[in-house]
Image 1: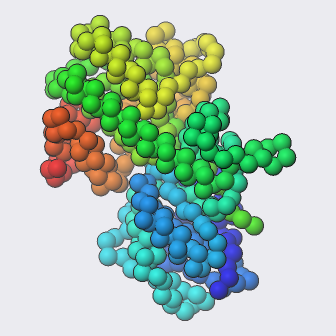
Image 2: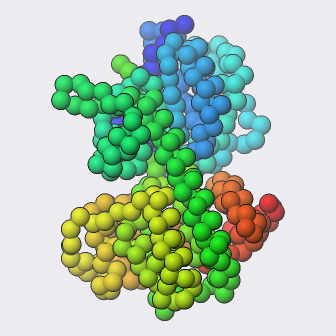
Image 3: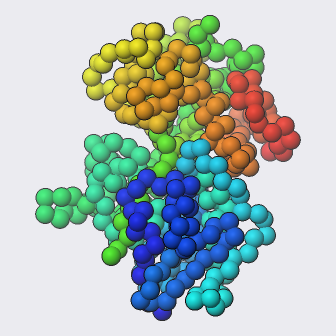
Length: 223
Length: 186
């Protein structure tokens, strides 16, 4: 089954909160996330697929599972990455024990078990306020898009790309980064931050900082 | 047509110095930022102010205060407003001017501070909000997620080990008082 993605195109380049994103999808009739119903339409018609969401912790096994699953349907390498919580998202969580039902032209379809599990997890995380990025692994992004994705300024991103020897591609006068390389960089940065945070806690513990505030006092708060 | 990149939806916040102490509150914001719940910007001036205040108050030694500043900066770096700008009517306290400068330069969604009364409620498009209100809004209806993160933070402490209850108690003292009472022990 060859498919193409179209459902997300209207959202591309927009700042997508779960609320906004969900509304757009619902309006297209592609997903009713609270009933956990997805529609997969065959080739040559509109395909609303895939809309997968993971936890903000982005477990690697899930990503790999999604690669497999998406390849199964799309015949292309695909990354779906949750980037973190949207502020002030107020959605209801998916009830435990929810079941996923996939229909193609009204006919129930059986999903690979790992994909079904992921989708259910995705819905729960989405309901908890997570947001997502949907992009092809091979997509090229601009340095500004990459900076936004990583959450740093563009000059800082350039510095990070050099430091981490992330491949940069040049198209004409413009520099581009392959999305899969950006994910690698993001992982490296997260690891770095974790290490630095651990060191911060170690220093704080050594300095006895954690036992000093039981009375609620704070020298940094004005009277 | 190949899909392209969706913009990041996590909000950007600038954190005031007064939320960098005590360490339990600081860790909460740092941990959540690493987890991608928001993008955290810490002004360089705030880090310097933290060090000076910790030293002056005798809370910790000068050497440790410097180390805290360095290590904190190593996690997320720091930001500086590129040029001096008038604080205008956004804050009456000139000592807080650097925050207004950073807000004007980086245009975050939120300025998170304990001293909301010292600022106008809105600086350009940036909402001035207390740490407690920000977290409460961020995790409203999703307290399960918040509690999961709280457990994760508590598990980071090894010397000594800190239970989830103990960590929650520390946060409550600092005003994060809307947490569930019946959270489980680590």
